[in-house]
Image 1 (cartoon, helix red, strand yellow):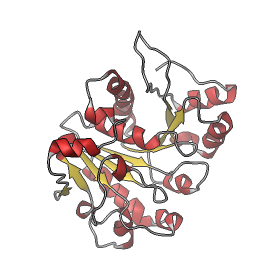
Image 2 (cartoon, helix red, strand yellow):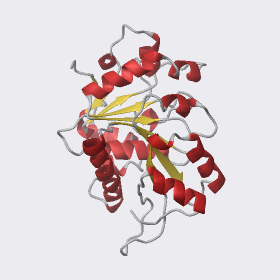
Image 3 (spheres, helix red, strand yellow):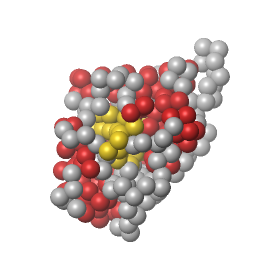
Amino acid sequence: MNNPIVSKPGNDRSFMKKVGHHLVSLLDSTSFEADQYRVLRNKVEWMHVNMDRSLIAVSSPTLGDGKTTTTINLAGSLAQNREVRVLVVDTDLRLPAVGAQLGMVGNNRPGLVDLIREPGLALEKAVQHIPQFNLSVLLPGKPQADPYGLLKSTRLKELLDDAKRQYDYVLLDTPPMIPFPDCQILAKWVDGFLLVVAAHKTPQKLLEEALNVMDPAKAIGLVFNGDDRPVFGHSQYYYSYIHQSRAAKKSSSSGQLSSQP
């Protein structure tokens, strides 16, 4: 594989200041909060080995549930194993947020949109690598007016297949499920979905709608974001868990979410 573009943020310390403070897997990997993402990482690694799932989309019922933060923290946790290759792809072409959270804004490098529109452009020409995090990132690139049409392109499938060949894990930050139809298109290309639910925020009705929209065969599980209950004497702002799709469906229909990790 050709080397991706190496992001050169300058002084590591100044770059770290640009990274969103919720990205604990990158900024404070020994913290209790980062440990919760390692619980999620363990489940994803198990699925990779036992179910051959490596192309995983992360979505949410609606805006503001924390899907982008979850995507990057999961990627950062996976990338703590320096022997694996992890790629984050921002497929939210309507409200992209990965670049802003990672402090990667203001450059004119090609991105996902450019790769879709220009079949001769190779994936590695647009991917940016952040060495200090052992993480590769593909940002959306040029703004455009037809996200739905671009995501329907078979060129996107070719790019994602190429990414699966080059990386051990490919995580897609996708648009929310309920306001937009984009995830229904992406579902054809991915191995599964993680659905992020925000504690005290995501309405149960929207969660049920999102689960109904998802193909049950592609529903990997739920990530419960922002649970503020104390665990083992610690005060936490993030507590994640994952269920197999059958358990997720059952818990939704009963109106409750399991509290077990």
